[in-house]
Amino acid sequence: MMKAITANELKTKGVSSIDAALKDEGEAIISVRGQDRYVVLDLETYNRLRVCELEAALYEARREVARGEVTEEPVDEHIARIQEDRSMRFRILYPDSYNKKAARFINGQGRG
Image (cartoon, rainbow, N blue to C red):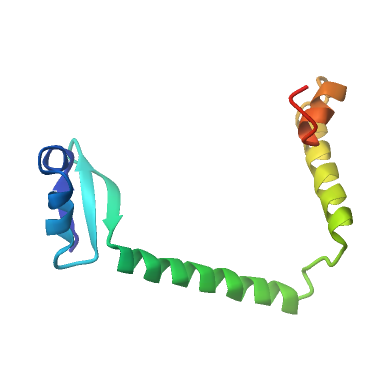
């Protein structure tokens, strides 16, 4: 079970309370007013979890490529498609207020 650190303990003892909690395990919970709110990880544990997350994303990307769920296009076409997608989403969400000022904002050409 993860070691728990209270917010008050963290406030009074500072980082030493985290060091003590992480001594035996690579993670600890910080509770605020009796409610578990945060998890603190040592750097080794964080890096291990990050690698797992990146490997899962790579696995999913490879599956999408194998299923043919990808689009190959030049960069300029890709950017134009993304801008059009964003523009269309805005028109669907705000059809009555769509105007040139909003279009400039959506396309990254200024705040209008």
